[in-house]
Image 1 (cartoon, rainbow, N blue to C red):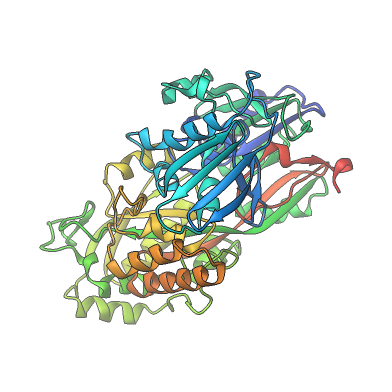
Image 2: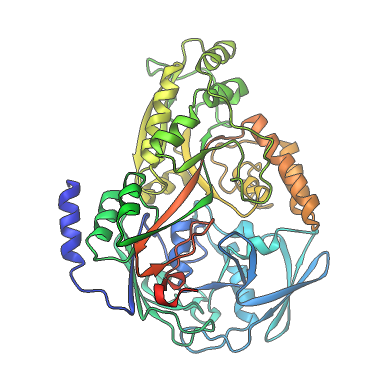
Length: 520
């Protein structure tokens, strides 16, 4: 359907006026489930955080802050969390440590997820309920990233969620949280309706009603904002930023994101999917197992051109697993210089003077200009002899195919609070028992990297931990565990009557939007 028709339909759909106590936000990606423990994807968490809380979370710059609990360390293996007293679930029952323990154990029971939450709770080897409001969590070894992990795990009601399926959460039957809003209706691919939880422990939020509208089409999302029928949008399309900035009716908020956009390449199978000779015949070996080929692919990418042209200035060329503001970023690691001639020489040295063919898989509705970025990379690969076609699809289909290991080369964006945490998921040797490699689609494996990541995560001293995390990040860059492209700069646009503190972690929270007159 043409964009113009879509926009016209949406304007009709948004016909009702928005009152001062109602907020409508256009989301840039689909929410695939309301089960907060099924898949660790940010679009899902964005919606779920309105209904559920975590023990701790992070502020707009990524620093851990108390939410449902305060904490202290009793020794290097024991963390004590003290719950806020009087916190009520949406059904009126009180939050207790029984709910906390249940919520920390439930992710380990989830099956069939393309990337769940077991990684975040597996380091906890024992849970001791001291009383109704105090719980002690024990780790087998010192573990400095526990707070960051717990920020990812949302707390559910044991009463409502015991034996509940993901379908029960989607229908609302089990979606009983302590968050600022109650789930009224979840319509996948369409919208999420929320109503204010008047018993919220954090106080009365500005909005009686919130509607989160799934608008993955960039032109449609902007059209809905310009028409005045919605109040704010996330991930403002790069092509629209200049005109929105000039328009006095709107306000923009921006931050360098924690998200790195990169490519996974299959390094573990002899015949990865979508990889063949230039004539379509099967290859005798997997070219990506050779670091010279991976380096050639990295040299073929003109990151500055992608940042300046494809991303229209809303990106920084990437070299690290995490962006510059994130714990463990190593400023000494620089982006691979653009060198197509050097790339062709490396391919020839590796035994591929004539190149080969690949299919580059990408979502087309998740990251800023994701399909356009993939198309640009495909052209750059083709110039060095790697004939590349792009297979783009909606996120809802993309993650399912990734789970089934259907991609040989795939684009992914990853945001993390620390480099060691990112590497554990993205480049750790896949090991569900250790919680390593949950999102390591390329199957990269290196014992030294695993050791550095484990040492970093096992270090309680922040300075020592960051030094180890930087060493691990530098090793991953040298070995080209994956191919970094860029760090996103994320933008929100809203009516002039609203304010929003731009978040490094890209989350969009309705309860953080404030009427201008109430802003401080």
